[in-house]
Length: 314
Image 1: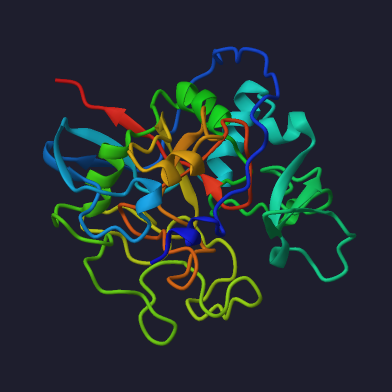
Image 2: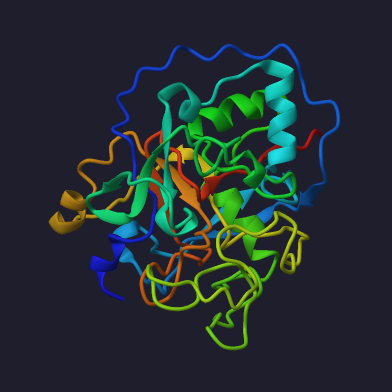
């Protein structure tokens, strides 16, 4: 697959220079955490020797040692994030900055004209869009409890993690958990490729992107956090549905000048994994375990969220 596909459905980014006051560590702590899955340690794999987007730094496949940890069975839901907001009074980056990026096809036909993003015109800058009103003012009814929280930034995820006494995963931890003990597989369920006809193991795009999502998997847009079959470890949506933040920067090591130029403006970007409901093999083939993307710490979109991991004592 050509490197040119790297310009894709992945998230538009803010400039990254919006100053944010130092987040205060919330005094409250989560009292009723959701299900966590115990992930065994041992020899972990990261990357791939079958890269589809080499420009993203997917290759090579390498081994690393992983300590045991626990991981949220699902991405953080609106219900859980709502409890965090109620306990701490935290104001998210999208709320503070006054807008967020919304995928245009999610907006109703009569939605007022909004600013498009030049490089990716299927994204719209929508004033007032936030986790609580994902399509802009008056859309709170779309913020359903069982769905993954979106329009949250990497900064927001870090503050939430302190409240929940967890942390964002490393890329190695994320891939180790996503593989579910199966070794060098392309997807959490193995190597069988999703298609537009009869195999829908995750929530991705069906049809011609970005004009029309056929919704053959039952969803146009995000799906509930606990939908589709979990992987062998019991983790839901480790690929597809929404991109998920990791703890580390988005860096690509390469001696190729073309790759260096492509990433020259991404200093300070944070790494996300998993792909989203906007991915399709014909355009943004990033619903694979080894796939990667990045955005600035204050960027927020309708297809980015997160889940946490927790250190295991003893």
